[in-house]
Image 1 (tube, rainbow, N blue to C red):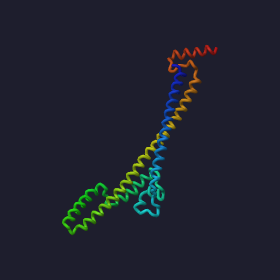
Image 2 (tube, helix red, strand yellow):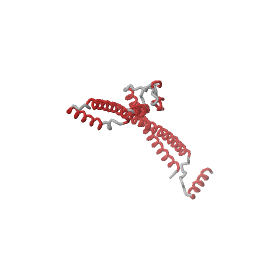
Image 3 (cartoon, rainbow, N blue to C red):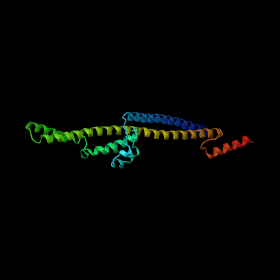
Length: 219
């Protein structure tokens, strides 16, 4: 095969691949922008703001991100992750000695049964049992609200990660497309500066024959 033909084929293939990478980069950029904008809009509607630095408790100040975002409105995925894990998570653990909403379900059920039984027998322990049930119920409701909000914020953070990854992929694709385009242009330039009769990987005899033919043409 002639060297010029080979250069043209490889260069054309490189340009086609560069075009595909450019399309991929544009699609990923569009997806990344959508994810970022969607997360920002949804979080902004919640009107959540980090506590100011002077209002933070000593435990809250132990979190570097809570301190860094102090006083700021919650609008990004990273802020959502911080607020969910380092702020809500901290306060949720302080309720019911670290028990979860699900774990408090059985104690609450048992107390309800005890209150029902004590009510029937007019047991003297009824007021104390009702007090315990009220406390457990309040703890469970607080945990439900905290864990639900924490889960929603972490979901928003997870969605925002897709936007970050999309931006990274788009950056790599743009770079690869530019590099391939430059190499392909160089290939086209080499193709049209290469003699038409030059053969790629030609046997020694053929190369010598072509060289002699060039010499004769020059003479």
